[in-house]
Image (cartoon, rainbow, N blue to C red; front, side):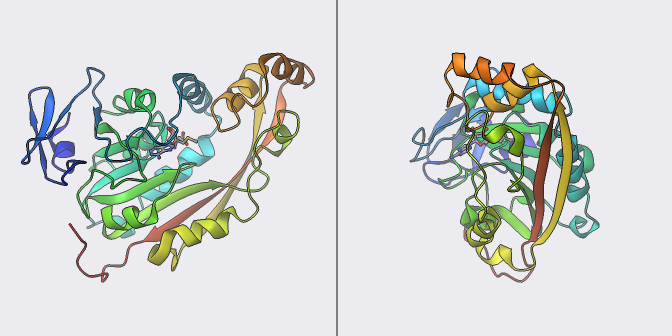
Length: 288
Ligand SMILES: C[S@@+](CC[C@H](N)C(=O)[O-])C[C@H]1O[C@@H](n2cnc3c(N)ncnc32)[C@H](O)[C@@H]1O
């Protein structure tokens, strides 16, 4: 693992600083974590394993969809957000919470050539891919509902893209002046697929809930809408369903029947909100 990344990590059991010792990380309290041969480290804390993580099939489907450039407008908006001139002079990493396979972290690091990146996800299948998404990236298996195993103030940018959001912990890990960049689906996101594939639809009040979960970061939140059309092949429609929370809602036979009923390429709406929140410079000392 990159030494610069290890220097930002803390022990999930006692909060002590970690250092690398061969193929392990060790803290001053003697807790150790092995670095997997795929390059990621598991730092699960007290809730370790209690929340559902994406499966290998979901991650593989997500890799294909994003790898084909179908979410390029989202990746482009993230690259622009991390290169915001207001972040010049703010030290810290780009931390992607609920990173999945790390495509957005990869793009963010392209927009932030002097920063390292840390992908955090509770799926080891996501972490395996994210550990090699970029030469300046490292990956950690951790649960964002626990204390995130990162030092307070270690992130200049926190990315949170279609993933769970722990506002208190995001505030803690952000450096003063650092930015939280969230991507949330709008009510019409993938709307053409909701009914035919019994997909879970987006709550109309999702954006209000974003504000509620962000606490002090919600003040001065800057929103921009990103809308585009995805022209999907049959395999891409199947992958889009397989990569998200609606995977497995239809049995295999019903899924095939629903796929047979569409014409291809099938136009589908992409519609998200990209929000940027700045942690105030004057928020006082962050707890360690
Ligand atoms: C919808 S996917 C989004 C992945 C990625 N941000 C993207 O847009 O390609 C949500 C990700 O959050 C992860 N996740 C879900 N619950 C989590 C938790 N409690 N802690 C950490 N990661 C979690 C899943 O494993 C999955 O990779």
